[in-house]
Image 1 (cartoon, rainbow, N blue to C red):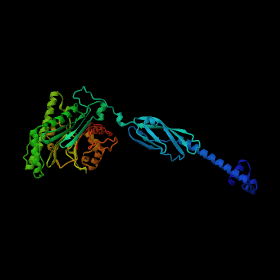
Image 2 (cartoon, rainbow, N blue to C red):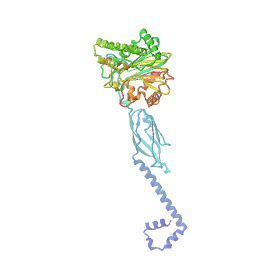
Image 3 (cartoon, rainbow, N blue to C red):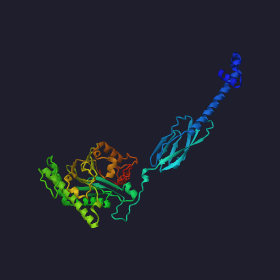
Image 4 (spheres, rainbow, N blue to C red):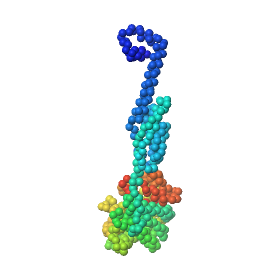
Length: 474
């Protein structure tokens, strides 16, 4: 109180050094002076509190406060940090509803899923909690909802009056041996943006003698009629095995092959210009199986040459990759006879532990130098032709996958990851709904599974906008 009295006297031009020391002491002892001093101190404190209240409100109003941008069609959750302004309370935020977001005043949390891209001014209605009147003020903050990258791509319909038309997407679901199969094929964003056709295609057939085949192809983007090339390749390949005599012969050779003793010899494909006498019975049956497959693949190539001539187009206008799996269930397990040319993989996931095996050789690595196509005559004269065929047996399997590079590139990136259990675990979880779009391909409750797979194919991957085709035997 002494300091307060001296301050008051000094403010009234009283020279403290000219008054007696006991004058101050007597003032302090005076009850009335003591009461007045308390009152003055209280008034000053109230003034300071009111001053601090206004200062905090103005500082908050002038403070640069940025709120993280939202993204259209993606869940948004952001909490405004008010630690620097402990007495400020935000009552509401106006204009949030126009972009599909909400505000929780208790937690200062903005949340929701904005539907479209937008830029708005958010009006933060706030007050200082010390203020008895709770007088409100407004702070304006610009807020951006970024566009969904998918929305930046046009989706132009393809010209259904053009030559060799095909739908922009296709699906299939049905039986495959004693299992199920689902296939979806979708035009890529790059083609949709230009209004061009889907170049991918697929074909599946239940054949005689217990066999079934699924074929997938990716037409070359540089080929004028790639869409027709992929369609021809898959359909003609499947049709070529709709021959009871061929399949019964394959059945006999497969049974004999898997009942003979193992051999370490490499199979050598016997073509029209080259023949190798097998050194033992097992090798003989292996050669017989692969030569039967080779004959049908070679016939396919011939048929595509004939088609190009009839249509008066160049064979390279039909350039397309091709993979297929010709399958049958035997007493000793499932057998998958596979072939591939190009960069589309065939994989089998064997069990719940997700042990995985690649069933074909891709045209990368040892086949490097560019993607190969079934329309290329040189692949049939290449000494590596035999390695394009594979004979596989499994006691059982969980899933068999055939995919084009529209799936392979974004999900696996490189060939060596096609047998990486960790990558496959993530891929299967992705199919099970652990993805940004929350799309689940349900292999148990599989009603409408083909539609779900088609929706799943619409996933976003920066820089990967090619056609996508995925076939799954499960």
